[in-house]
Length: 161
Length: 254
Image 1: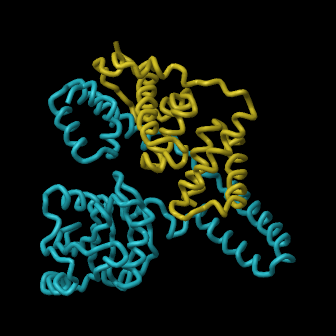
Image 2: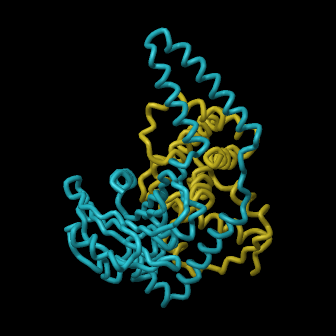
Image 3: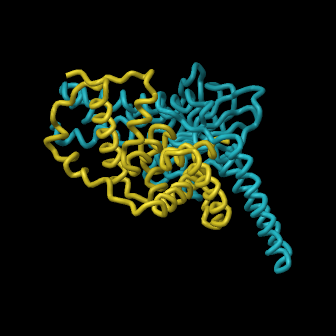
């Protein structure tokens, strides 16, 4: 069931636990059935992911009043920080745990975009469809998300100074 | 191009989402700039790690069963509600559910990426890009199918479907002979507005007919199917819906 896996993987990263991911996906599938008239054909995976994402955010919002976590963006995207000579990122592919932990530390909007791009291989256009963001925002947000991941991984035990 | 200009575009460059010319500019800059080259290396490394190294949570089998059961229940409830009103509504609901299950379970029609054919998809896209770059789009340039069709005779041992769909907005541009995945393939070129469409055809004797699958790779839309021992790949930067419309047309005439 390739689409169900995609749906579950996104939900699992957004909700950060099995139980809520399960519920969100089941919820989304039922919503999908009800909203079926809104399906205009095309990529069923993109359509389903969009509904799954909405189901997750509904749950997340219900659970807590969502603080805006992307407030550091301006600092991150300042031109000086971007053009500074980057350190070489040393990644140890054996350590899947560190990657997953770093992902979990990211704000949702960065986490989901990395899941969609790197794990599902969605194009910028498809991500724009799922998130209803302009393509330009998808591009800059993905760049910021990767930069944040790099910082988290560099700040981790792999760092050598 | 300066670092300030290149840096914000590096991610899109690596993801194959940039216009070809801009992509060349970045490539040229990165070749001469150690810092940007390192940034590119880092993004590639991270990207590779995330796609290969980070946990991918597959749906637990119990969840699939739960979802199926929940859909069946909902289904039955809807069917009961609609049946007394209009009799054949039930058929619509059943059809919708079948399509929905196809969307969720992933039938052949809706598979997003042609994954088993990944290597071929890559080759097809590369060939499409090459045909645009090298100014070698066509070997025989003609919108007349009676010129293009015979041109293929004697060059390939099968008859690719060549037809001018100008009336439907997809004029024939010409034909080309290519070499792809170790075999000679026919490329029939069409156009939609400014978009070039490459239709690749080659024989796969004994291969079973497959339904149409669509996918996206490096920003190009792909459509693929197999019919009567011929394998078809359609690639273009045209939007997915119109490329699909074109493919249906070819499939219907092929």
